[in-house]
Image (cartoon, rainbow, N blue to C red; front, side, top):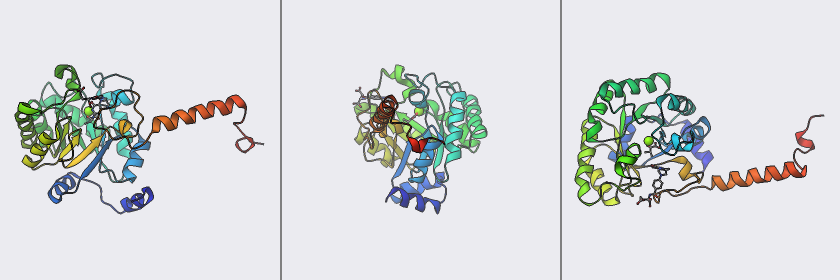
Length: 277
Ligand SMILES: Nc1nc(=O)c2c([nH]1)NC[C@@H]1CN(c3ccc(C(=O)N[C@@H](CCC(=O)O)C(=O)O)cc3)CN21
Ligand SMILES: CC(C)C(=O)C(=O)O
Ligand SMILES: [Mg+2]
């Protein structure tokens, strides 16, 4: 389908809701997600038929200029989440709870989730951790807010995990399964599996009733998610091996900036067509 065909088709489509995640798994239809942090990309991804947009705390690396997600605050994510939520007509928008906004306990977690639901138009929240975050998930779900879990490699625990280390390999698969079951039993509508071996992700996917969304988890999951700046070739630094780059935006923007600079230097921009009489 071309971009404009997808745009036309989505005008007739219903908003994505949690039940669509469930029915997609039951019917073997793959779910597609991207991160987004602003109105322009959110509108483009929504029109192209991407099912859900995560306003990730990866905004720390991609928008706010930090080198990890750890410093990111709720106050920083609220305006970005609002911009994304206001730009979509079909996609399901998920607010990522940042480091330090839910770990203290279920009350803190619910308070943070309330802030996103009241101050943005997000449809759900996401938080990291399986067994360790189950009570938080349960409390937020009980208040009527859908929760997406996130297990395997959890970037907010980067220092505790000793870097970008693959999780759920070999003997660790039992812990991964326990985390997956804890997230499901606490009432989450879906769970992200990040940087886990394909075989382990397949096992978790077969075991769970709720859909699994892979980020570096191989093909045997119910959906895929990528950080949009990695996916579009905009990221400057090292890109994880699991990313397929669908565009070279860094090259395109770099060449455009150099061409603009040269035109101004040579006096070929602005031309008469850009000037007022
Ligand atoms: N999904 C996702 N999670 C992240 O934490 C993350 C992104 N994407 N994209 C942007 C940055 C860049 N990050 C990463 C994460 C992993 C590698 C990496 O090279 N990993 C190795 C495997 C781990 C290892 O053994 O070092 C790889 O080959 O993919 C690089 C950058 C972390 N950030
Ligand atoms: C990589 C995804 C899962 C995420 O949490 C984020 O973008 O913040
Ligand atoms: Mg995140």
